[in-house]
Length: 204
Length: 294
Image (cartoon, rainbow over all chains, first blue to last red; front, side, top):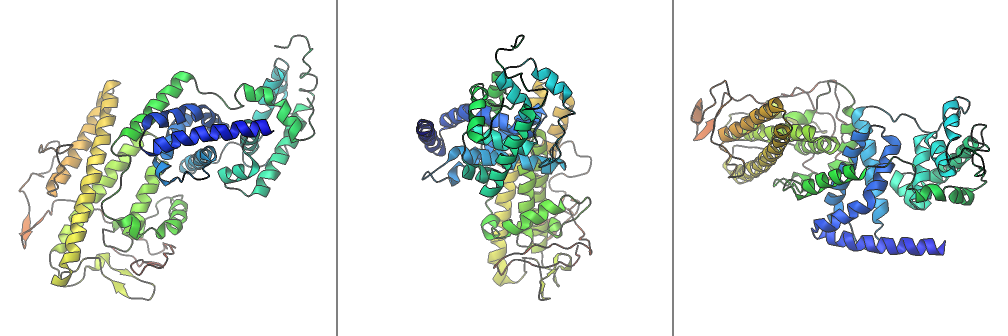
């Protein structure tokens, strides 16, 4: 854990150096920031935005907004990553507000029906563990996916996720708990059990 | 695959993390294309657009309250805003500008943005026209712009015809001109960019339509005696079916040109409609429900 934190701190310092240059108008530095974050921000956007061209538009919007917002940033204790994800969250929400529609899966689904996911389970038979998890995650409500992405892929802590999603720490903790509970159910359902055994024949 | 807590889940998904997470990836080619668009956008002179008219500082306290109202009301079809017909100096003018900024902030395609910017540039020109028209002396207050404050007092629009107010009016006028010039120039720059994009992709009809928009804006600016500078001004008057040539003014009053051929935006406020905008601690702000006007 200490090792992970050290890496995270080091990365943050590197990013902050680039941010300081970009604030002074160095567009090359901003380009490097883009290179570092674009892919992960795009994946984050794609959790909720199914249409790829729209997701690309939103990605562009996020970085243009970020550039415009640089002047308002103070370098002291800057958590640029969390700030950028917050912009992404807001931009995604604005997108849906503009289109007058709600995301495809609303909020917390307490009555998740595993039995209907037969095709997913069949597909699951062919995949490795990581891909199984990926498939299972796609079956979660988008809010759960967001929290798990931010928590376990992007290594944000609960406070940072709360800032990004504009929720309380308690709400985020509950979301994480429910997300893990749901994915546990999925991964332990009939279609997935035994498929994570690396010794199973026919696995990729 | 069984896990009982988040630490176990962390281990299970370590493989997934190494492969980049569980959303869909953007192909490198597309990532670079979006990067180019971002870098172009931030290099554009329009990025740091700040109107010369300091409405934003003056009305900053309205932002918190106006946002939720405007966003909420935008969901109701056919809603009109009391602020729509306001001009610089009017109490609700700041709300109008905030609304425009919000619309721009949620526009995602270049086409939508350029269209909005052109529309708002035209708003500036109309406001300038309205402002200049009001400088002409009236014998009574312009009741079509009057609003009622919470305590029942009627406030006339920002302009007065007394000589003591001429300094303030002149400042408003100059600010409005500078504002209009800035927005019209920005709109034309973005329209030209869009026009090039359509022309390059062979969409000649769309490119021609945009050219017509550009000419329209330039003409309107010209009719308001607004010098756009070298960047986007054009003395050409073309593409207009009505007789909007220079020096075709219908009349002059006290040395000011009155363009009676120009259609102004006018908005009727629905009497059933309430603007529940709480504006905090600013004597110039309006609060409560405006009477229907215009």
